[in-house]
Length: 536
Image 1: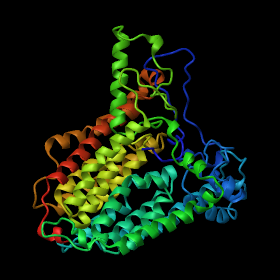
Image 2 (image 1 turned 120 degrees about the horizontal axis):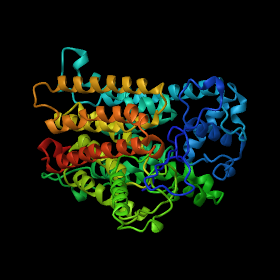
Image 3 (image 1 turned 30 degrees about the horizontal axis):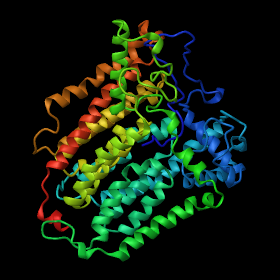
Image 4 (image 1 turned 45 degrees about the vertical axis):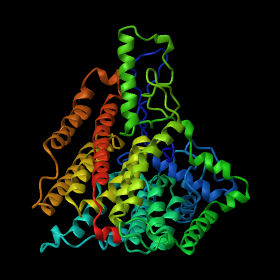
C-alpha cells in the first residue's frame, strides 16, 4: 500500500548518508525559509505545498487541477480536499493575494503564514467537537470523585493535547486535526449505533485524504456484522437469516453517492486515471526520505549493515552496488543490495496478510465498539508496518483511536504508553532546527508525564502498566536523543554520515512500534468474548 501523502516533505530537510562513498555524490543541506520576516518560525515545505494548492484551485478550472505541475508539490489529495483548498483560497485572497499566484514558488509573507496557521486552528473546532462525542461513548464504570481522574477527562486531554498532532499541525503545518475529527466523529457515531451517519462521515473522510483507506476494512466488516446482520446466534456468530438487503443497499448508496460527488466530474472529463496516478505515486520508493519506523526500516537497515560487512570483507563487488541509495534522503526508487528488493505488490500482500487476523476476530469474535476500535488500530498499525512509502506521521492514525481504549482497560493502557511514546519520539526529526529542540522536548515531556501519571492513577488498583523490560526500552530514548542532538553533531561523522541520527531514531522506534503491534495482536487474539459482548 502506498504512503498516500504529498511528496517528500520532511520539514524541508533532505540529507544523504554515504556509508559507501562514491564519486560525484552530493549532500543536500537543510533549506532555509526564503522570507526574512518569517525566519523565526518553523517553516516546513508543507507551507509551500498548501500555498500551491490554494493557487491551483483558485486560478485554474477543475479540468487542470490534477495536471498542473509548475511546482514540484503537485496536487495529490482526493477531490474533497481540493475543494477544501478552493474554499480556503477565497478567504486567503483577503489576507495576501500574492500567495494565490501559481508562479510565486516558495512565496511567504507574514500575512500568508498567519492565514495558514489560523486556518488550521479554526478547522480544529471539528476535532474538538469529535473529542466531546468520543468522551460521551466512554464506559463510566471507573467513576472518580475528582474530575481530573475521570476517564472522560483523561481521554479529552490525551486527544486534544496529543503531542504528535500538535507538532504535525501547529508547528510543522498540516490539516490533520479536522481530518482526524471526521474519523473520531465517525467512530463515535458507530459507538452510538448511528451507523448510517458513521458510514457517511467515513466515506466523506476517504475523499478528503485517502490514507484512511488503511482502516477501511475495520469499518466495512463492522458495519456488515453489526448493522447489516440484525441478529446473532447464542454463540455470537451471525444469524444469516437476519441479513438485511435494505441496510446493505443504504450503505452502498452512501458510498456510491459520496464517490460520485467526489470523482464524478473527473470521470465525466475522462481524467480518473490521472487522478488515481496522483493519489498513488508508486514510483516514490519503498521508504520515505526519513524512514518511517516500520518493518521496512528494519529490513533496509539490515540490508545496509550486510552491505557494509560484505564490502569490508570483499564478499561484494563495489562496482555492482546499486547507485540509488536508500539512505540518500531523496524520494526515489532504489534496489536493496543484499536482501531481495521489495515491490509495491509485495507490500500490498504483506499488509493484507497482517490485517486478516484482526478482521477475522471482528467477524467471528464480536465485542461491540471495543472490538471495532481494536480492529481499527490493528489495521492502522499493520498498514503502517508493511505499507509502501509510508510517512512517519501516519502513526497518529493508530495512536489517536488507541487513546479511547487506553482509558477503558489497563492492558490497552500499557500498549498505548509504549506506542505513543515511541511513535511521538519518531516525529522528532520533523522539527530539526536548534530553536525547535527545547520546544519539542518540553512538549513531549509534558504530554508523556501526563499520560503516564493519569493512566497510572486510573489503574492504581491493578498491576503496573509496563514491565521492567518495556520501561528500560522507553528510558533509553533519552540517551538516544542526547546522542542524536548533542553528541553526534560534535563528531567528524556528521559530515560523512549526516543521516545516521535519523537512521538510529527510525530503527530504534521501529522496534517499539512493532512490539506494541504484536502485543496488541496477542491481546486481541487471546481474548475471550463475554456473553454481553456476544449479544451486542
